[in-house]
Image (cartoon, rainbow, N blue to C red; front, side, top):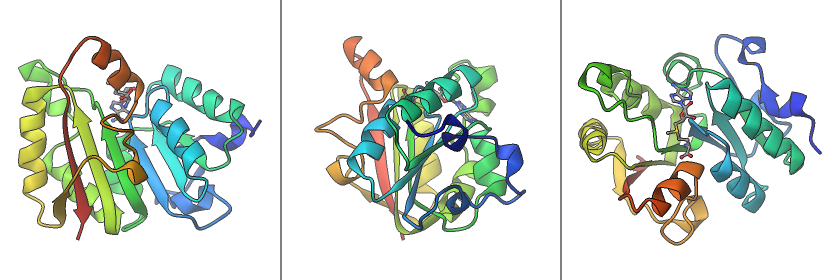
Length: 202
Ligand SMILES: C[S@@+](CC[C@H](N)C(=O)[O-])C[C@H]1O[C@@H](n2cnc3c(N)ncnc32)[C@H](O)[C@@H]1O
């Protein structure tokens, strides 16, 4: 079992600029999952790729603890779970070019009109997100919400640094047609449609 103290990271203990590589004792490439929930995607990926480091960001205490405990029970040494606001982390704290991949699966859709300003994927966030990606890094986004997907397409297509690539990519997280996050598995049973995009940072 890897110590929970190592896996669950109190962001307050890191500097204003957050050097994610300081969380690991190697310089392997780092992939970030935003809103990792219960950590199903991270668990599978970290097991499959010990040569990569994974960081999950989750602000709900219940899920943060659940995911960190899960990684600890599997004795994974290449995962960290941060409890913080991913928007603030990406926009103000990460170092430029620090990520080899960013995964955003089923971001909260905030369907009511008056709540839509709370959506994560907005132009200011995407501008910052692009700068955290290294050249050639992958950005993958999946939602079950058709109207949010339209917004996501508009926001991402405004970034010339993002070159569209196929979403399905076994090397970077898909198993057949699935990414197998907890929400995807649940929504699949309900017969919902999924909308997805992937890009390479140029
Ligand atoms: C709909 S759930 C999807 C969870 C997971 N990605 C999946 O597919 O199973 C969205 C998750 O993102 C988290 N979340 C939403 N906004 C966030 C933010 N700004 N920072 C960190 N986590 C966030 C929520 O707490 C929730 O666990």
